[in-house]
Length: 424
Image 1 (cartoon, helix red, strand yellow):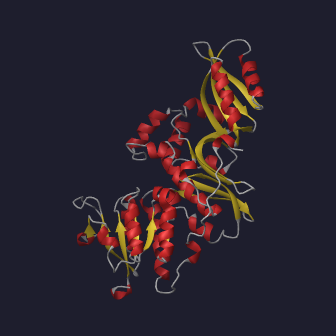
Image 2 (cartoon, rainbow, N blue to C red):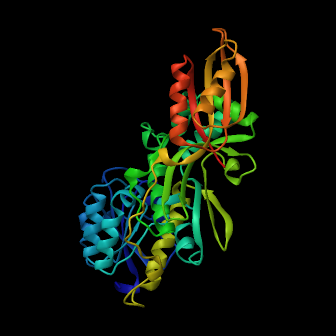
Image 3 (cartoon, rainbow, N blue to C red):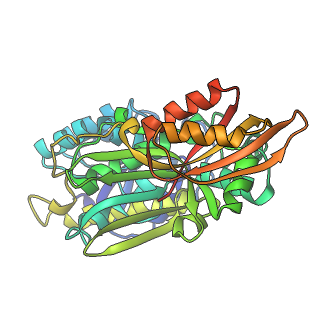
């Protein structure tokens, strides 16, 4: 501990989250932010009480500073974040991070380095912003066998889908609006194609199932194909369309982790999580089913999680030689991950079919030949070019059979506009 028994913290990054962390930490007497690394040292920062002399544009000054005991990495990306964190740990520092991509892709290496050096990495802010989820899973829910997670963990896509639903607007129109309001990035790929949600669910599944999740085997599909007409059809059928990150552990221990749009029943909690709110639903024994929801991003909600982690570490420093044992990585088995083609799902299919006699019968026959039972098939309207818009909801079927049926429906001269899985 430094002078006045204050624990010295180094912040890497002073963007939205870093600013929130700095402002929040000011009200804690036992903590001193002694250095902050930024990309651009000349940028004007309107932060009260910020002493320019502690700002550097060389993050290695922080990870190599012998007085700093906790480093908070709040910049994201793989490099230099990985090297900075690894260096900091080897120099005896504990880590707090909000970096979901780094955890999903290289977490295994980092947790190994941390254990070898008897340091901890906490990452509450990396999964769902301000929602406490990691610490509850590792501590108060540790007595549960949790085998099912369904979550909305990306605010940008949830905002876009909510707006499309409320306004009956197209994806591209709402995306432009979200970009103008700062809810979506100029390059929205990481969010709208499901990468962000995939990193989060991979990490969440690994700590919940105590098995390593290979991010490259997480099935990922974004929201760019969702149309206003799909929203309308889903509503008529009693559903909302959401981008769902899910993880299931089967009886035999196999794990199914994925991110894709889903028709979620209006009776389910997640159907009513709107705009930028996030939510994580867990099912387990003995707890049953619980949902935690709240702000998934933003300056202060995310700062709440980062500061909580910093204080958890600060409270233990100097009290024990092996701090926070419950929060450490405890697994080294790789999960056996199920390929999407081998999963069993219920589907919504939107088809533009030639309005010929017997077209619905033909679609029904193709489905039957592929072992697919239909729950409903509705012809919604006939367009000017004499094509009918047909909406199908299937019973539970194997993904591979569904994909074969889609090929045959298209070979028959119809257009399959969308295939969206339905929450069961």
